[in-house]
Length: 278
Image 1 (cartoon, one colour):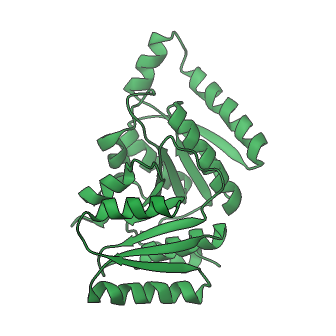
Image 2: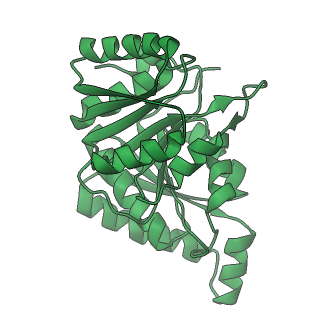
């Protein structure tokens, strides 16, 4: 079933510092893309425990979201709304994204600070359950859009969806794409197709070939050396194609020490011709 998209960026928040950073980056992206921004707080056991501890009503969640929405609207001159919904962060974020037709999710991830502890395996579960790409954001701030994107290519299977997203982001932000591939004839052929599409769409790109040893570290070091704003990776579908898996090197990239945002793309059957109108 095709996922309907309504030009919306969704940002879950637990009101922590790193989620505030995710909101700022999402607002910046929404402004570039001319999308609406939707703020979401999932009211779960952690929220209820926090409200009880602070003697706050459940209405205070919407009040807090509304205050943030007003500030973001004034600061970025974009349309902003907010949603509070009871549920579980692992499934409710994905459900809301699907219901509102979000195109992207920005997810702040951190340590044991904040109400809902969106860290480690928790954040990964949100990523792999998502019906749309998720940009994982840490504490480091990026406020000038995306100008240098690193695109790791590790196999010749299924690169088209990632290529389309890379093109879409690059064209909207005026970015250059740095293809970072593992050496090999089959991968060379895939990269040739990918870069052929970039040329057709007038996207600036570079290519770097490396061995497969310590690939995630090589990607992070390269992205850091390029002062990259974004790394794009694709998850691998499991046999049911309903949930997705991340390789260990993907996890290392997502939680990279340089805190470069990472866009995680789950394979889905989108109508790309309808969505990607250049």
